[in-house]
Image (tube, rainbow, N blue to C red):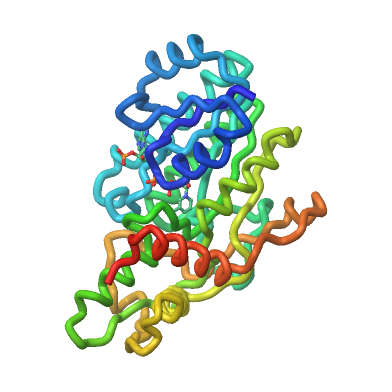
Amino acid sequence: MRILITGAGGRLGRDLRRVLTPHHECLAFSHPELNIADLAAVRSVLQEERPDLLLNCAAATDVDRCEREPDYAERANAWGAAVVASCCARLGIRLIHFSTDFVFDGEAGAPYTEFHPTRPINRYGATKLAGERAVFQSGADALVVRTQWLYGGGGGDFPVAILRAESLRGGGSLRVVADQVGAPTYSADLAEQVARLLDLPLRGVLHFNNDGECSRWEWARETLHLAGRGDVPVEAIRSEEWPTPARRPKHSTLRRFVWEQLGWPPPRDWRAALADYLGTLRANGQLPG
Ligand SMILES: NC(=O)c1ccc[n+]([C@@H]2O[C@H](COP(=O)([O-])OP(=O)(O)OC[C@H]3O[C@@H](n4cnc5c(N)ncnc54)[C@H](OP(=O)(O)O)[C@@H]3O)[C@@H](O)[C@H]2O)c1
């Protein structure tokens, strides 16, 4: 299959390229190579390359920056999604678009299925929801894959941030919020599973996360434990004690309801995936601290 990846320089884009390249013809475009908010450029590249499938990994993912800079959020997450989807619809290209648990408010008290009403509580979530709607309104043959708490690829993710903070803490304890619950999801696991979605004749929304759930505090503790630093004290705090420009949902775990209906086995538990990731970082000499 001829597959074009947008946002290919990001965490998920890099993993998708790595996983799919041995089996497919992958055309990878990073942000500088193709800006999805540039309608003329997207149309021209798609007309030229004529892929069978487009994987749209491009997004504005800095949640707090989205809150401060609405244009930054809307340009990629809403308008960019509309551009990509409209061009795919016009040219008959199948689209897999990625979205987020942040389309939910986190107040339901149980994991969210694909069919639960959305209600974002920050601008990132609102613009990602606008992007989902634009995808469906475009008439493209499209699947929206929602995921959450994505990490992988080495830099700038939560586990690496925790290990960096640990190495800089100078003897004090770390402080991590304990009242935000979700399912940490390894981008390599998501990329592996996208491979099985390529031939699936499904339109609509599908949730994917690693199995289980935890608070951010538990995620930090497990990261330190797996990195051999389980002795480091981690203070459990409330979100109000760690103010950020954007509010976060308190409990936004995704339930893989569609996955279950397809009869597919659950992915591995988040702890096993995290252990694998930290093992890979260690083997590559990239484990901080
Ligand atoms: N990270 C998470 O925790 C998380 C959670 C749930 C869902 N998701 C979703 O999963 C998908 C992949 O996320 P990720 O973690 O791989 O994000 P990422 O590492 O931030 O990658 C996103 C990439 O998109 C690029 N980009 C931004 N605006 C663009 C534009 N206008 N045109 C083309 N490229 C653009 C970024 O480039 P620059 O760096 O140059 O801006 C970056 O390389 C996104 O749809 C995201 O919303 C992520």
